[in-house]
Image (cartoon, rainbow over all chains, first blue to last red; front, side, top):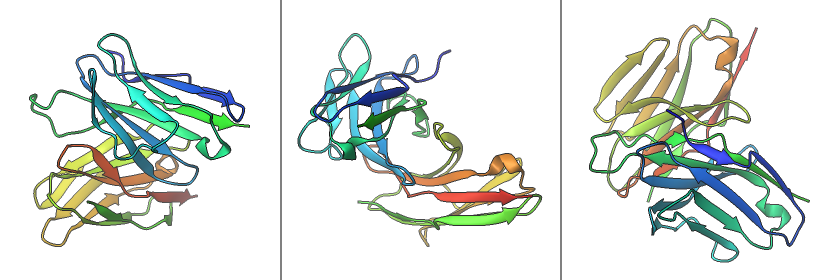
Length: 117
Length: 109
């Protein structure tokens, strides 16, 4: 049973380019969360999605950042016109449907490390 | 919203015990999580407390006092591999986890 899969693990972009980060949740999980972690800092919530729905995007910057979780395929976090300050580790996490009995534990992927030159 | 505080760093020697405190303020309580994160790796689940008291799991234990908005993670018989960041997290009413900044534990020989 594969865990949360993220790719690419490492991505280098020049300022002004676009970055696309992908996340496939664990099998049977319908909820996806994206977190950002700057060096030496904690995890900051960005967005919470279910299939074809954005549930909570209160942590997303208002510009250049977008996220989707289509009916088919992985969730994608897209950063347009990247700047040096976007350099960070971006973690995806998934959880089972709320109707299933669970503690609310999140299962994390290995992260995608974006470096903007 | 949530406000979560934990110390930035703690240092202890191999074989010792370390207690990491976490205080939180939340508008509604849905449990408290502890995660471990080694440098450059994904956070991994350690414990979940929803009722007051101590939950023991091997060398690691977690305590919760809901009335005080307080939890601690106790690491016993420290090993070098326990050097990591320990994250305290509470879910909001939607279920998304809000994390503290993490406590970096450094285990020395």
